Image 1 (cartoon, rainbow, N blue to C red):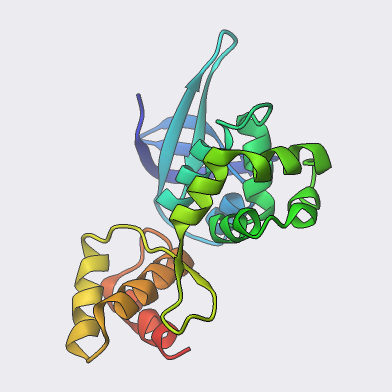
Image 2 (cartoon, rainbow, N blue to C red):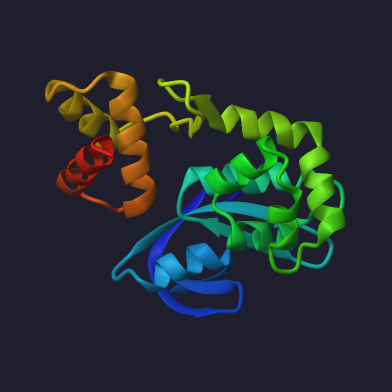
Length: 205
């Protein structure tokens, strides 16, 4: 199975992109949000890949970050929500927005996603596994004023950025949240310096 691909985006279309990896063009299905982010970037891109095999085809689904891939994996476990409908959901809502909508049982917000509809929105909200996924993505705010997105495990440049922020006096949980937000905004290819700069701004919010 393919876990990730790194290459140059050769073309984008409705719900798909062609990723050129050493001269081989891989057709990868993506959410509209991911395609928009890919179109705004230059140079090689890394996509996390989910491979789905059916009797008709082997289809690759691509994600710029682990949060979107985990949301996709959770969605396709819901009855009648297949991979294409999961991408429709993620085209309309980020993983963070989706988690908040599910946890808050915002049925109308989900139903408003293009191509989804009320019946599927209700099924997603009422699915116990989706509620569990949503609550796992959310943490209580330190001031008790709501919920915040739980940061993903940090490594590499992200861990270095957290270390830099804690050396500047930030508490580790605050630094981790700021770096996680900065990483989601900048994408996988961001340099350490840019990550630290944006994370500092995020921590000042």
